[in-house]
Amino acid sequence: MRYGLFGVVGLAGLLGGLLWEAKASKQQASQPANSQPQEVDSSKPSQFLRIRRDEKGQPVALETAIVRYVPMDCSQTSPTVDLVAAVHIAEKTYYQQLNREFKQYDAVLYELVAPEGTRIPKGGARPSSHPVSFLQRTLSDLMSLTHQLDEIDYTPKHFVHADMSPEQLAKAMKDRGEALWKMMLRVMGYSLAKQTGAEGPAPEMQILLALFDKNRAVALKRAMASQFEDMEGITRAMDGPEGSSLIAGRNQAALAVLRRQLADGKKKLAIFYGAAHMPDMERRLKEDFGLVPIQTRWLVAWDLRSPESAKPAGKTPAAKVLSKISQN
Image (cartoon, rainbow, N blue to C red; front, top):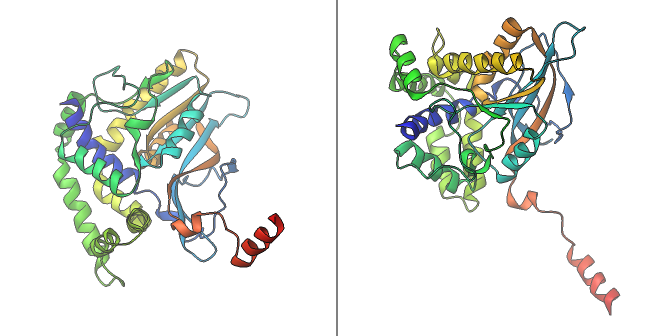
């Protein structure tokens, strides 16, 4: 049951994690490729996922944020809490970078709908036969990406499970009268409404055409990433007006673990969750913990460059001739 339900939640996480890019992808068309800290305006909602574009407006990368929070009271120097936004399928180098980042923390709180204290073995769990798990891995293969559970090392002792159990999530959803199919129907209805009068091919056609592109992996990533430019509206449709167990309920569970870790004296912590969770998580850090954001760093989750543009510039034919002459 654990992996079956996690597979379903994983789909919601994959959708949600990829659906928080909307606010600045067009306004910030030419963001620099820079993982150095950037100061943020703490009075404005933070951005947790974006599409970075080049000077021509072409997509270069899908990026996720690490946003740092410190006490609002300037007389306090700790704790610091980093919200580490995640996407559940990404480049292998993305997860390698995250593994390096996680070594600096006293505790890393991670999401996993599973019994309390569950540990993921190094290299990931055995592949699930659940249809959603199969879909995730098929998408990973088609887009030449890897899966989070296969690449993130959850075995270090400072990794702390901070999520609901399957039974807790099922009860919370029942108590709220929630159903995944209702959430997906709301998303479909919102998407259909947005398509009315829209220019260009429908999203389904873009993805279909990408399947037959000579650079299929990049074309698919671009086609899917382009659909996330209104992910705030899509996530709002999925979550509903009263919040949901999948987002708000699980965030409450994670922050209850955060309180326990702080009480144990931990000073530098990270919360590693899907990007869709982060706006609500940020609000709770501000209101319940008195923490405010001070800086953001960006990591490349998907490389959206074409193979030609990603390659280093080679020598021109004339340069090759001159090189051969100089060698003789």
